[in-house]
Structures are given as C-alpha cells and as structure tokens.
Length: 146
Image (spheres, rainbow, N blue to C red):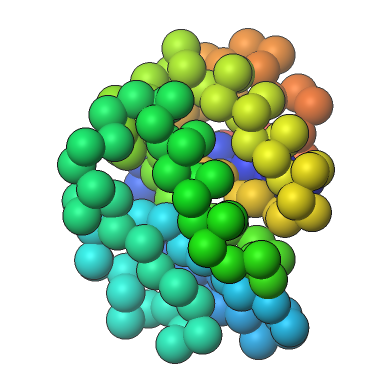
C-alpha cells in the first residue's frame, strides 16, 4: 500500500514523516527504511531505522533509476516492512509530471513485496489532478483546513 503526505513546502510533512517512521520502527518486527535527500534528519530518526541519503547516490538521475534503486534496497533486506520517501520531488530529478507513473510503480512494488510505502510530495494536491485519487492521503484533514 502506498500512502501520501501532500502539501506545499513548510506545512510539516517531514515532521509528520519522522513521527510516523519512529512509531513504525517501535512496533515493527522487520526493517524500516527512510529515504531522504541528505543527512539532515539522521538524528531525528530512531536508531532502528535505516536512513538512506540520496546525496550519496548522485548517479540516480531519473525515476527509472530510482525505481531500480528501490529494488536494490528490497533485494538486500527481505524483512522490510515500510519505506518512507521524504520529498521525492527533491530526489533524482523526479518531477511532477513523473509522479503518476512513479506512484503506480511504487504501488506494484508495495503489493508484490508486501511493503508499506509512505511518500511526501511538496505540491498542492490539485496540481497532480487525479493522479493521487487512488492513494490514501494521510493528511487530508490538514489539507481540507488549509
């Protein structure tokens, strides 16, 4: 299952992701992965969480190589229960136009390997049209109020 946290920059998406990841790590019997642009959040996350910093993988330059990278993470650890991807639009030149296909591909991976994937997107939901309608948006109450 793919879940989303969507909204403009500065609305607390990363803070929410950190809280969700830390909670998940406490209750999980498997691995929790947190993919972030850089090392900035490393000390906000519990030690049980494997933090992956995309700045260390500058050769990943598009959504195809990013998906391949996700497969590599999965193949190296068969106990992954959740993958958190913070601010995907800052990684690997993934743009708004790539999001619908990217989320569909993540959904297939999630289903096949039974991994929950939580992705944050720094956009207004209406900018993505119907691309996110089939996914659970975790911050819908916040979006309706804002």
